[in-house]
Image 1: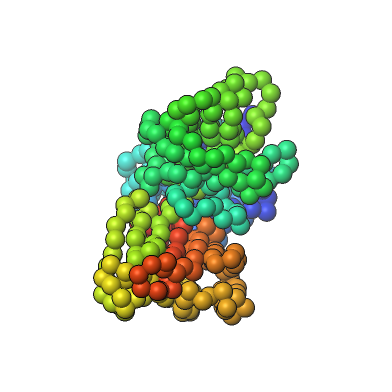
Image 2 (image 1 turned 90 degrees about the vertical axis):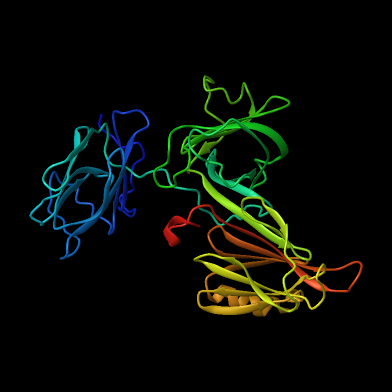
Length: 395
């Protein structure tokens, strides 16, 4: 039977299609700028716009983002891609031909050809975890969505370094802790020896799997995207185990980078680099910037060794707001400000956590000195996805 690895829903956004091939670990990712319309026919001319259809192909075959003037495609009842024919209108023609469980051919400028034999329909790739649950911002984390007997939960594995997740990397040691949205998948920090699998998720660029073994004891931590997540003994996590794994993973890895600043001030980068920044009294500096949010800090008048962060300015969706150590007295005002821009805010004692959008999180803590100059100041911990489409993927 010619089937997709993971089926599209008929109501899903038909823009990304992952096509399996007969080469182990090699797949083709086809991305359309505009969603297809499920036509379920054997063949259909299906131009989304008068100016054609724009497509990018990567993985086992590679085609830069190209505009095709002629486009024909067919989908299955599940919304999976069955066939595809694309042709440019330029004199030196570029074309794409795909038939499920048959050949996929790319021809460039009427000459050079790339081809691969496909073994299934174009289905949806395993996508990175996305949920409302906020992972701890104390260190870099992998976020995973799981389903345990019909109940969905978010699992956070903290303690990774900034370059982790590269396919085929390891073994190396990491001190990891595990937490979950429903508290059913928690484990205190342990030292593990970890290795990442060689297969690559073409959407995230991260490894599709990893395996970690505790350096002492019999604890294993094993993950395979859209298949399983196991935290248990070697016997419980053995691949030959006859009964179903205790938890099914329903996502790929999402890598969350953590950075922070505290004290007078001590800064920690996403790579784990630690340094002290004295700066100039009363000066304002850019502390963190991303395509989603900018956070600036103002330093105290004291110093240079006790130049704490006394105020922080946030720029979010074109609006500005200032945070001081007395933010707890402005709960209603700050909640209204952030929620009006689509963010969520939670207050816990002397801390305030703002989730600007999925997995872009900043936690502010109101602090005060216990010795020396009496200063009220702020600490902040920031967590963002490890890859970002903006800035050429630099963030």
